[in-house]
Image (cartoon, rainbow, N blue to C red; front, side):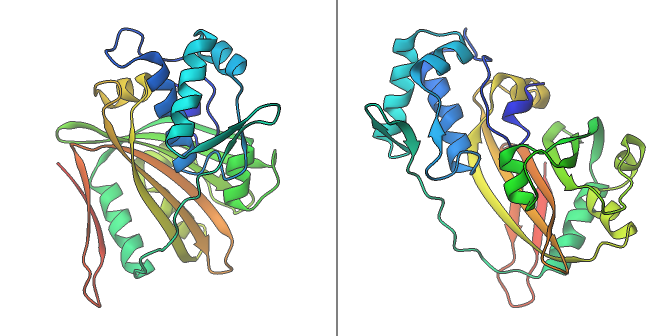
Length: 264
């Protein structure tokens, strides 16, 4: 599995669909664009040089240059001679408020009604992007869990979670197979105080497409969820990558409405 595309950290991989109809430069553009729009490359951060991209993706510098030029034309980066390429895209942030208790119950029910295959559970140093979202120091240990959820029609989504260590939560493949990760937090006495969820469209890289049994560059719904405890600390960051043809989210906008993820 290509971890860089699905772990909430910056990519830098050579996995391109070289036999696809989509030009290589545009595949690199799509990968970098998705990293920028989901916040893995925040405003002001530097983007790899033409030479670095050419090495990472095993392409020519001309191909790498076209990818960067396309990012610049799209308003995602600014390129300056001798200063390099930097992100100028800012993510809009006007959240819709919802009831956290109802949302958590819906998510737990969703997890219990889909089949899960645990791919990996590790404790590893947090990347810069993950550490920023969790509010911890870069390199500090964090629990990382990767699961594949499936419905009756087949693979539904790849779920990658990073959790603060030291919460007293027992995260094992056996427990994650039996219970949603939010249930594990509750069982450990962690009180959920709130969450921020962002939903955006992206395209599947070849590794993600293989896991989800979809076509490379197929449409994917990326759902990022930052879960806070009752003290305001971010305790869990989950990045879910769902097949757009099998997953949808419904929001009841009435006063007592609720969040409801569904799948087909």
